[in-house]
Image (cartoon, rainbow, N blue to C red; front, side):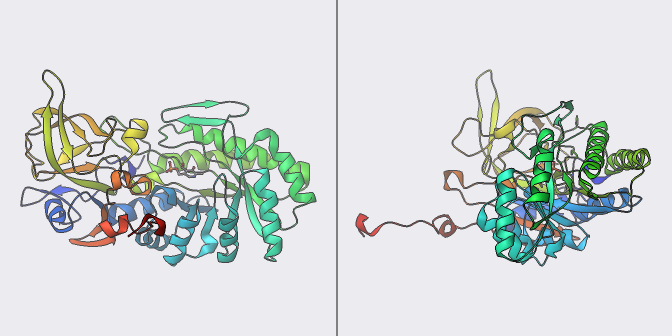
Length: 443
Ligand SMILES: Cc1ncc(COP(=O)(O)O)c(C=O)c1O
């Protein structure tokens, strides 16, 4: 089976250059750190476009595939432009993501608005900008959306977000009749939702069903189970209500290789499982091939991204851990502190040096949980060395905060020796931009 870029530990263009430094797409990482300062998010355009093409090729044998990018994993105007150029639509979950893709020039008909508690202003913006589909999550939203669409004189195409009774915990999954999940309609509630749309909500037009079963998924069979459940629901609903729904959104979830012990499947492996399951179901039920949507995030953008940090102080606890501090941490990458996510790193200015010490990379933020990498083998390091942490393209910048009032890092896009800023580094004035001191507190 063909491999794909999400199975790589590093961006595809990573190599050691003539200066003895790490480079990505012809850009020396030590020079990038000097020029743009650290922490610095670096994104490799080549790897990003390659994985988009892997997805397209993998699903090319199924005629009705629509690929959406889950913007929650990384939402910037430049990356949205690249993804749109590669033929992707967008799964967005907020007005901020909607506005970003709109301003990037994305065709809003290719956008699906998803999310578990969408606000009135957000739904109105979606109506105004003409997003292609809204994934309705709950009963309140159905009635609200119907009312807002009526006021706007529009009919809205919707998918119903359902919880199909499958839940993945990275490498394992469980299947149950129903799930205790905050997202979507339980299988037992769908008929009620459909009756309401048919009988009362005349401004809504149901096109199909939407599910998402988890993230950082390594298991392939889970996608077959998902297809089986969704197609059988679609067929059952069409029969019971005399409808002709033919759209299924299977969500995202394909995993990536954060460390050497991660073995995610390729896009080609999951495509084969999904397409085989679809074809089996099409035959079994004698139906027209449904339109399928996929909305991967992490597997599209994670491998393309690295974060550069400058090493600072270090501390050897007597008979204990050696900590080396970096100039970033949980505010630019909250994943290790939130859910013990693991990362791999190398020293960008000595990638060839023998790893001789076991160290723990500590963040600069005031939380003892702010540890970026526990127990990694590195060469001897000095203050000022540049650390390159791999696989930070997804859910790093998009989850970043200003904890401790530290400014968010810049992001550069690298391509064949060129590095362009796509997110400016925040300044101290950005940090206080929204602060106000009431007059009564004095000058
Ligand atoms: C509804 C939905 N779709 C797609 C995604 C993207 O998942 P991933 O980044 O794992 O591909 C998520 C992530 O949580 C999601 O909730």
